[in-house]
Length: 431
Image 1: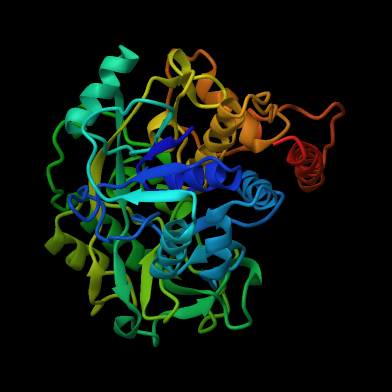
Image 2: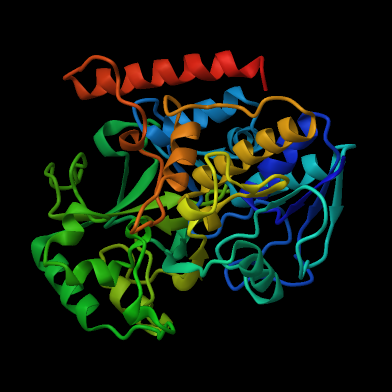
């Protein structure tokens, strides 16, 4: 039986790939280029919007472990990420166009995948995975609401600015990775600030004019993408423990750790664009130039993209979905609209939904990833009753505890990872 996947973002692309790998014919429906959401610009699949970083690639970090689980299950997203990798210290960052291009090409060329470039306004008959993202709207959103019988929840998401490398003043900035990780020269450009420079920036940030976002004042902001100006309101030095933390960095001009540091991360393979790490914002465009221009090294920065903010919606999944992201037989959801947060987490939900729907269609037992894996723990999180359900990144806290306590944090995390990957290897032969 043919399955339909709606949406070719990271979740939908991964879901379609996993179905096709298991011999299930797939129709992959993508509304671009006929229509673009407010956050998307490229025609290709799996477009990265707010950052080119897929975060930590270390096994002692939950999202790093999640990546390895996905690699072992033949994830298309992870295959593309490795091919499009750019330097980023202990993180996995990619060239956006190369990343999207590989995924688009692989799905277009697969004999079991039929790509349909049109906007669906209703849920089609037959087995379906809905992966239309947190900006789903219009008639399709109304169709989902009729199917679920529930209201949507919402939060706000923001994207950081991107500047041209050749406009960064390297007489004030320096290359380095935190704690010396990454390449020999350092994978980040760092803009150090003295206390006086930080204070001037902080005062300007507090008084800067923000762009209106309908309903923002009455809704929640996802903590993982907190606008920098919102974070600043929490206290004078809050930013110094967040996106501007200097720990692990030494200014080669002074030989000391700066008071605060803004890091910029390479955003493309050609090494021409750099992302202001952690600087998601809803400041008006002229204010972004003025306020961020107070940071040493960015006085004359040219912007390839200014920061933006938009409203996201997600399902009340604990009352609707099971641990495999299934609403009912033959109807699954995947991606940020389920309450997983982050690019890799979204792709992972697509993997679980695709593997599960394939098993359902082929009359095989549905996979049980268990809480010993990040894949399984995330599914359990979004399907467990929760009166204040909010989107969640991958973390060790949602996974099963080890049978015995290990005091050393790194050793404990590696033990969790070893148990998880053993479970994944056992599952591979059954799924």
